[in-house]
Image (tube, rainbow, N blue to C red; front, side, top):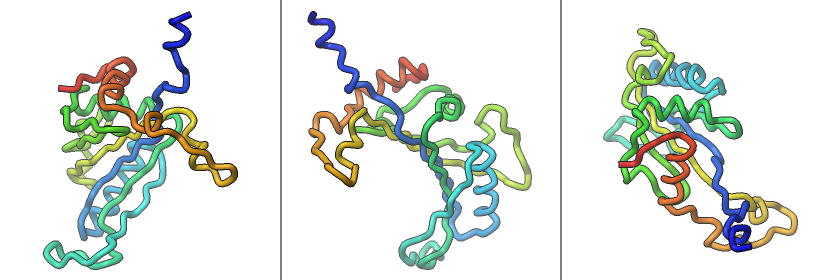
Length: 173
């Protein structure tokens, strides 16, 4: 009887979304290359990142295209395995925070199966993996929205480390 009480399916963690981002600055050619690379990696159409304010020291004006990103929801296990292989299945302790994992990939040639393309050049990327539990829709729905307790919303870093170890064989050092 105690074993049934300990196993609660609502406490299971799953991946909400994966966001892959490439910052390009003010360079239009790099912007095209970044979009092409993101489409090659994810198979989804990338979106331009637009600057919200003017930064004269970086020669960025408000409304300029400064990067590209893709959000992948649903079946993303294959993509995540490829991204973790690029960092040798090792993450820093500081990469894992509540509800998400963030890490960078220095060069896209570290990804398995992708060869260097001189037209694209050398680009790195940032990866953000967001986690959630079942039942979060209760708070986000438009009609009869409910309240989800803070204990259920926040996924501890230790739980994420265990999830990554069990599902993707990732070591957090």
